[in-house]
Image 1: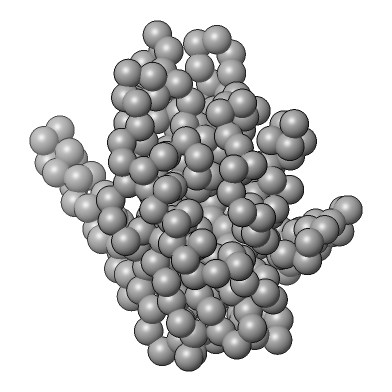
Image 2: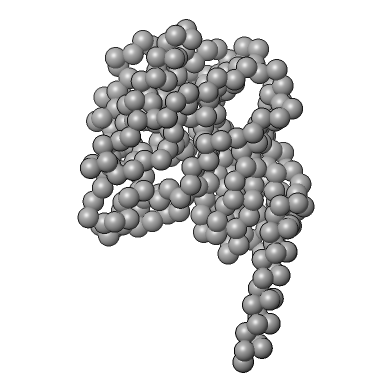
Length: 292
């Protein structure tokens, strides 16, 4: 019995080692989006296959879905939603779901950023939330803005989460990891992370052909304000709307629970700020509840 246990342990160890090696060293890249100035690509382990894309258009959204598989067994999906708003700002949402039982490493890459200027939206640590009400919130401001020619790109962070049903029946997202640090080399922004089994990752970017703020001073003022007033900044954007930190309840699983904006919409307002393309865009993607 002892010998069988040792053999089984060794088999599991070598399987894990093989998977780790394939994840770390044997990779390829799939381009999933391109326009005149930018390309999005997914760098993935070689053993994960992407299906032919499935595309659909509904209203202002163009959605592209790829099935992910290993040896013919489906292990998740990659979804890209391109949304162009009434003010001509475009939002790109990327979601990867891992429906399998093994973790894998991914890098969501933004290419053709050669010569772009970059401005961080996190020049200093963010102030804590009211922890008696909301508990801890590890999320930060969006990563920052790239400016290339006449185009601005506001890049969000990567949010790794799992769906969770609370004791009251509400479904929320439990944040497991926020990925706020990327690498930029030779014009490629790499958003690299591990995706655990039964989890999903979400990230976003906002692109515009004109400045998001009228002046750099106005942008700096908002960045400083948002770092000190955490309830005013919407960091986690999805096609369904922004997700925000929910207040604590007797259910201990609300410690890192995030839900839709409607649960906290009365606390948000951009009315006291000078009009800007950024604030207009945030109101549009947040829905009517913020425009009351």
